[in-house]
Image 1 (cartoon, rainbow, N blue to C red):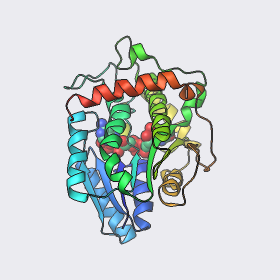
Image 2 (image 1 turned 90 degrees about the vertical axis):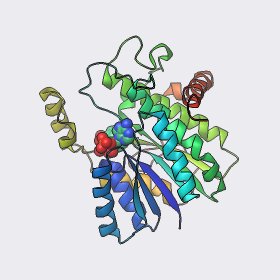
Image 3 (image 1 turned 180 degrees about the vertical axis):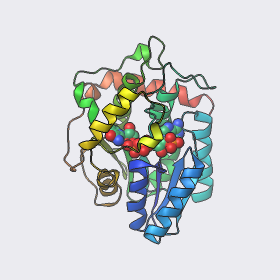
Image 4 (image 1 turned 45 degrees about the horizontal axis):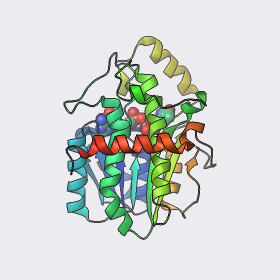
Length: 285
Ligand SMILES: NC(=O)c1ccc[n+]([C@@H]2O[C@H](COP(=O)([O-])OP(=O)(O)OC[C@H]3O[C@@H](n4cnc5c(N)ncnc54)[C@H](OP(=O)(O)O)[C@@H]3O)[C@@H](O)[C@H]2O)c1
């Protein structure tokens, strides 16, 4: 039986992907911050698919100590891993100022960039033991609105200024940069690395009660043109479970698409990788 971890699988696209991948007979681990809604999703997936090899593990990805402990616990309990989907993302647009964690990281950067980096690197040993492993990182179509976007190395953790939406796009750019670096590093192994360019997908607005009425109004308009989480999750499932592909970034129709220009620049990618390595190695060796 193949094993798959999906972060943020208690809701939205991650939950739908967990259901689809469980339906294919995989053991699926829902890596969730909210254990109550994780357990609820787990029960629903078991009922819908008849697959009893679905379980929840708790992790707050904004904390590297928790992310590292999650990986250690997974390694000792499961000993095998074929697919890792770094789906969770912090896009809480109600935040007014940078939230610094007890570990000293800005929490969005920590959850959206550092955690996928640490999780993937800690689990790489198990992934390399699989005959056909996949790492799938989740990006956003919104990046297309900023084709010339560059990573602001002086503001990676909101040191200069903070805006949750701008931070989110900086994070997604950084995640794509690290994904491409990882793909290159693993080119001679059995581990394939993919990224998904998620389009406008319906969001459960009950989850985002704190946002302003203007933003709620905008989300409502946007949702009229959105596809369902289940539809979007089909791309995750194809990349996780179908035949290997050579490409890097795929859209909602499984077309290979180009990332922002900056993602292909080697020097900033190396700089970012080194920063992530240093920020995640502090407490987790
Ligand atoms: N929906 C869209 O239109 C859209 C567009 C572009 C990209 N995307 C990307 O698609 C992915 C899935 O989003 P979605 O639409 O399915 O949204 P969602 O339903 O809000 O799911 C986000 C998930 O991330 C989890 N998460 C956030 N911060 C976390 C943390 N610190 N630790 C652990 N888990 C955390 C959330 O957990 P909690 O339940 O605990 O909050 C939730 O399970 C994300 O990467 C997002 O950036 C979505």
